[in-house]
Length: 304
Image 1 (tube, rainbow, N blue to C red):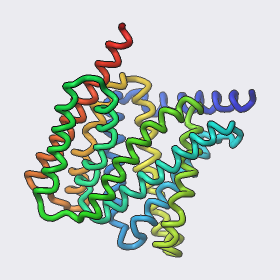
Image 2: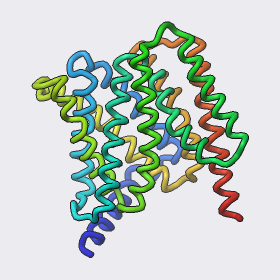
Image 3: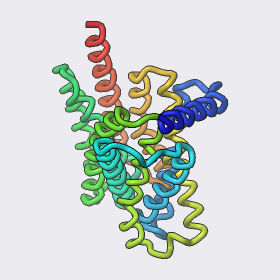
Image 4: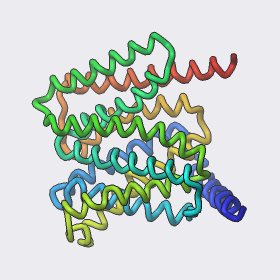
């Protein structure tokens, strides 16, 4: 009982903070700001790969994000076996998604990597729908990926493979996230899952970067990346989801590949070809279409 009371107290505390900090900001703007923070943070992290490596940066990002979330939510480690398995699975998938994406970023442009990774949630939306018309969105997304490999020079096949692995992990992350929400309250499940994710990636980060991870300048960059790519986007999205329908949230999140491409261009000077920009547009449109039709189907089912 005390555990439930503390979780409720923490959630009420977060709600009061969110209202005071974000109350005057329109919810769609919160989502867009979260996407910008996430992708600029990823671009910033990529600039430090030469020093700490992709594995080192993702280790610092998750470690600092975990520390912040644990301090905010103060989750209890007391849970039943089923909940523990869900948290463990969620954390493993979260760690794999971040690690594979950063390995992709080390080899291919940011916009290309995020666009391919976005096939994960898009696949969940399409496969979870019973509408035959959703095959159009699947074909359009497939066309986008095909175009990505045709324009703007030769892409590293290993980088593409890591981006596809990140897409698979993102799809699993969505499914595991739904189970996590059923078994935990507030942000306690996220904090514990992030702790597991950190444990998953630490061996890779230490092996690749070693003592470099303890250098003050690298630690500072890791903290900034954690705030920009984990803590801030999560906080903004959590508040936005309380104030707008999930359908609208999903459509806004479909902007992520385009924002990633712009962040790559402005921060990293990763210029994409016209064909690759067309490919990104194809995936964005496919995501918007799949999100809208999927949500319409849910609404129709609810009315029935």
